[in-house]
Amino acid sequence: MSLLEVRNVKKIYTTRFSSNKVQALSDVNFNVEKGEYVAIMGESGSGKTTLLNILAALDRPTNGIVRLNGKDITKIKDKQISSFRREHLGFVFQDFNLLNNFSNKDNILLPLVLAKMKYNDMIHLLIPVARELGIEELLDKYPYEISGGQKQRVAIARAIITNPELILADEPTGALDSKSTEELLNVFTSLNENHQTILMVTHSTKAAAHAKRVLFIKDGQVFHQIYRGEKTMDEMYQCISDTLTLLATGGVHHA
Ligand SMILES: Nc1ncnc2c1ncn2[C@@H]1O[C@H](COP(=O)(O)OP(=O)(O)OP(=O)(O)O)[C@@H](O)[C@H]1O
Image 1 (cartoon, rainbow, N blue to C red):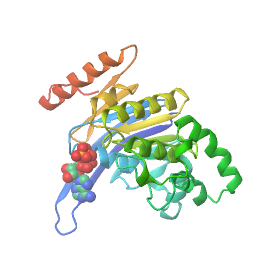
Image 2 (cartoon, helix red, strand yellow):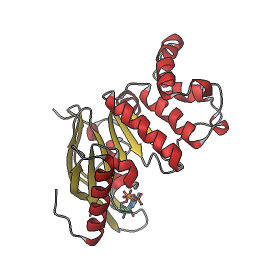
Image 3 (cartoon, rainbow, N blue to C red):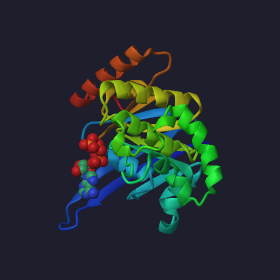
């Protein structure tokens, strides 16, 4: 069984003040296996954020099924959705989403506090995670006192401290300079080498070249995919950038 199964997912938005309908996703199908590192690319408006919101159980599809470990997350009751997200998923956002009036440590511990874990147990989990991400010195500082790259590492600590089955990352390098981007991508690679499954939406060819597979979305469906396989990072980069060019001119066959 795949970790994530996306079947015939369709999303139509109906705007509030008119009967206009926008079809953001027409028929999305793909699987993600445990331990994979997948990037999702596509032009602006192709439906990436819509898809990520559905995978995150932040929004429901108009049709279709999304299974995480065999469980259809589109059927989870509203009351159980927050705890489902906390227990199974980790989130990394472009703009970090850290709370400025909480210390970095309290930001990282927040999902465990919400899960009502005992303090000593939380610290037990925090220490190895902070060490792994090299942020031990930053724990007592506040998000506004640290750099963007450091904030993203704190955000990753918050995402992995619950040991999630899947990390969903939305444009995680979008607000970072090139040095911090490189560092963040190295962190993702090392998490993945430690068996963390990652799904990342990105506009960045460089970021996508770090993934083991890239899915391309066009016209609300998966249009093409590339496996890293034995390719070097440079070869993968070139392959992605050629595909993006073909995609923009409509010249790629369906996956
Ligand atoms: N809440 C909404 N109501 C109506 N239409 C929406 C809504 N959210 C997105 N759309 C439309 O759905 C389509 C897909 O949007 P989406 O934000 O998923 O694309 P995207 O690939 O993430 O774009 P970008 O790369 O610019 O973030 C677009 O046509 C967009 O205008």
